[in-house]
Amino acid sequence: MGPSTDANMQAFIKDLDAFNSPKEFVRASVSKLPNSISSKQKTNVPLGVVLQPLAPVEDLSLVPDVNFGAVGGIVRCKSCRTYINPFVQWEANGRRWTCNL
Image (cartoon, rainbow, N blue to C red; front, side, top):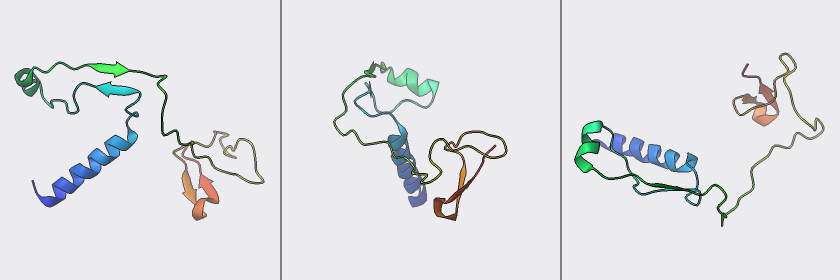
């Protein structure tokens, strides 16, 4: 493995950790899973998962929101009337958006 491959893998793992559920909600018995059936059969490690969907969270950060100012209320596309969603394209430093549909 070259240095760029290691950097890509580290970035992938960082993104994976950022988008996974917090450890208070889901805990697995292993941190890495085999990537093929043959390696799974060789390791023979059982997988256990503990799910706690209502577990208390110590570091409860607020969900970020967008202040639409004078527009207020629910923002919808003028042409197709779909609601604003995470996939819209923002323009002009967040002052305008383009519908993804």
